[in-house]
Length: 110
Length: 117
Image 1: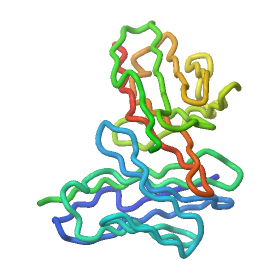
Image 2 (image 1 turned 120 degrees about the vertical axis):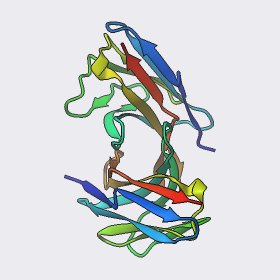
Image 3 (image 1 turned 90 degrees about the vertical axis):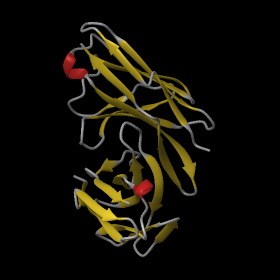
Image 4 (image 1 turned 180 degrees about the vertical axis):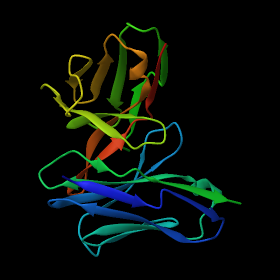
C-alpha cells in the first residue's frame, strides 16, 4: 500500500526565514510525485511534478527536490502570502490516482 | 490554462434531499475526473474515479448508490449526494487530468462546501 508522510504537521516562520518541508513516501513504483498548495476553503493548486530521483524544480521562492525515499519543498525567504497548507502526493506506476499526505500547514509572520 | 470549476461553491440543504455538484474543465478536455471529500484539518480522501462514457470506479467504503457520479462529456462530471444526511456534510473537491509533458496532472476545482441540516 502506498504511503505518504509529511513533516512537520505545522511550521511557523518569520518572514525571510528559509526552511524545508519533508515528504517521505513508499510506493511500489513511482510514476510521479506532486506538490500542491491549498489555501483555507479552496481546492489544491498545482505546484510541481517530479518524476525521478535527483530531479529539481523551482518556482519563485519554492524549490522541490526528489530522492528515492523522500521529497523536500524548500522555501527561500518566505513571505506572508506563502502561508498555506502544502500537500504532497504520489502516483504509482500504472495508476491514475494520487495518494496524499496529510499536509504541512505553513504560517509566515511579517 | 488547466482551469477547473465547480458549482455550486456552497450549498445548505435539509436532511433527506439530494444535492448535485457540477465539475467542469474549462479550457481542456479531461480524460479522467476524480471526486474527493475533505474533512476539517484533514487531507483529501479519494471517493471515485470517473472516465467519460463509462461507470465510475468507487473507492472502498464509498457507497455508490449514495454518491452518484455521471461523466457526461470530456468537460463535465457531476456528483449527486442522494438522500443527504448531516454526516454527509463536508468539503467536496473534484479534479481533472490534463496532459503535462509526459505525465497527466490533476488540476483541482475550488471545492463545494455541503452542509446538511
